[in-house]
Image 1 (cartoon, protein in one colour):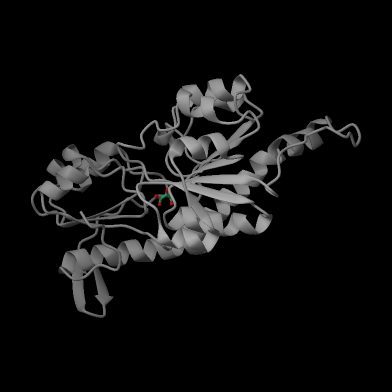
Image 2 (image 1 turned 180 degrees about the horizontal axis):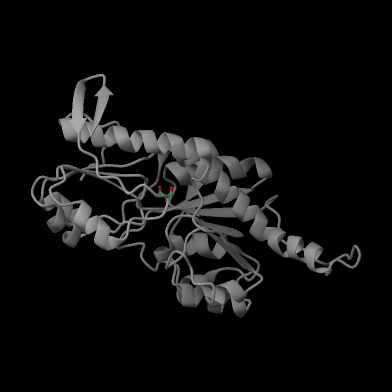
Length: 311
Ligand SMILES: O=C(O)C(=O)CO
């Protein structure tokens, strides 16, 4: 039992805690959630009708330690009148930074270079050895110029990016700040030297990056995804990378997560895969955790949440 003091109330909660950095096993979640009034979850916890039924009618708030909410069955949640808290804004900078790091690592072939140093492949300085692609004078296309997409664009512009294209549901006034040009997806894919995926996963973005998409990219272009793995058809990406249809890809997100170590994408030198670490800085995860707890408390007391998802 824990007493949590918030400025607006003193709340007495019984906490059922999965005390580990590993995700809670499904069976434990289904058992532990029974009769709960609130649920704090991770993006790896699929909160569907089964979990909601296991929780029962007491459940009034779900607070997720993530900005993404594709792991939540929103229709089912809405139907039951449950409120949802999430963590926008606080992870924008960390995720944008990681995206830039992944883009540069992929385009300048850093993991390959590090490997060559370790395995004796570095014989001498050679004019064309480990050449990659630079941002200076390039065209960057951002799919989804939301909070994170804009933060990525802001960071990339000072590298000398010539044109910044973006696409999404509608033009964004804030794109002015980065001289962003709102273009159809087709134009973005055909004209960009770097295609950066920063949209949320929704029915209209599921498998958006498929065979047709990659076939329109330039052979010298780099594909980066730090949003959700399911935006990409991975078989089509493998084909595009192994056939030389595109130059390279950097992925912080995959389907599934973790990506099995035997996955074909991991055999490719021109594919850099990270284990979903976009927001993984100590301070960001600390702020995300506090926000998630405060969203939960506000939901439990029926108060205004610091960050409530509009359903
Ligand atoms: O918050 C999210 O949605 C992430 O993907 C990790 O921070």
